[in-house]
Length: 247
View 1 (spheres, rainbow, N blue to C red):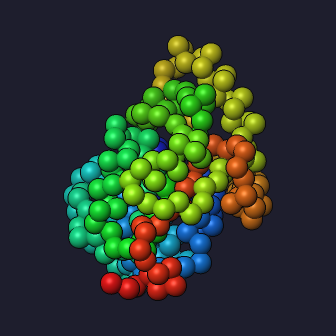
View 2: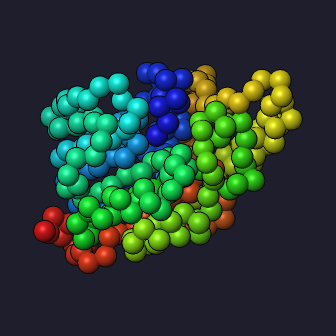
View 3: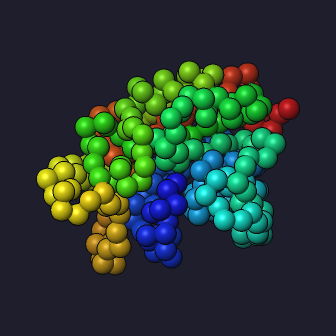
């Protein structure tokens, strides 16, 4: 998650349609396997870890982000959540990389680093911005290196030693409007410079966008055609999906 966008939205992040909807897609991607421990790489505010602590059997989460000013631990709904600049010993059932890979030069290398430390059966859920032709000042502002297709993000996970489970696009319902906005922003980029396209909306607009994306989330895992975000799911080979706690 981009700390820049967290700073832009402030407290509104928890109710903003984009993050609420992406959390729905994350729940679809993670599936129904039991979760006890979450490792959230590039976690930013820890929004997605809190969603999993609140809505799943997860008992604890570790959020890793080099952008943190300091390290701390706290309790959320009686569960442990830690914020650290470097990853501790990897003991997680689920590893999140939400909007992380597009920021690094060596995306395969970053995933491989965590795969090497994960136990067999660990599930990885990754989200990345979709389609290179959608590149805009939004990407420049957030310091992205690239955008992906389902095939290219799945290839990254395979190249890092994971076994792909599935991949799908999300935010397909708002895709046409977003494309039009991106194309327009290219024409006006010279006047305003690079900037994030995320912003606060009127509560009614925000609620409408959430309802649209809730409806999309019900069929999201079947979308192989288009969307603003690409999700990919993969497991480290050798584990027993029915018992993610095995050693």
